[in-house]
Image (cartoon, rainbow, N blue to C red; front, side):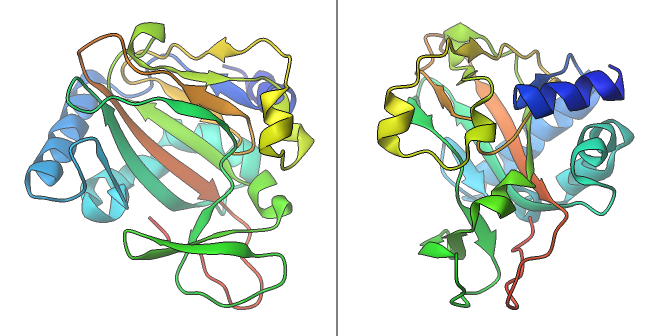
Length: 230
């Protein structure tokens, strides 16, 4: 991967897929860490919020050279993880997600601020929709712990929609561009802008589809608001 090719893909298409970045041993360790956390009642059978907080050993992921190579060229060297999730589609927990953009961030506490709206609590953490500019400067990495294809609920994206700002449900519904299914191998990563319109279907495969999703930002928030962190 050349840095220029990668930057161009993120700028023009809003996403970039890698082959296996993490080796088998690290993937196996992450699977076991997630399984152990879930078995102890952290999260639900299909996943958990605050993954890097619940599984501290996974936090080193954010600063591996292979991860830096994906994050720094897009948002700079002063990045930090600001939200982390773990998903597991399996035969006991299977779902579809409609076309949408990721519009919400997690913050330490509520401070009413112009441009920040739709406050909510998720797993006792304050969430809010910030100004579009905040989201435009973020990057999401989806780290795949299983081979993921169209049969087990791989993410589908509509290239280029990240550059259109915040889209209403009605505008998303009438998009005519051809979706791309992001088939990513175990240990591979999908890098994407949060405003990229995306969705996923239910898995037709009874096996696991485990993904760690980490959102990164480098710019501070305004008016005393602070990123929640992991």
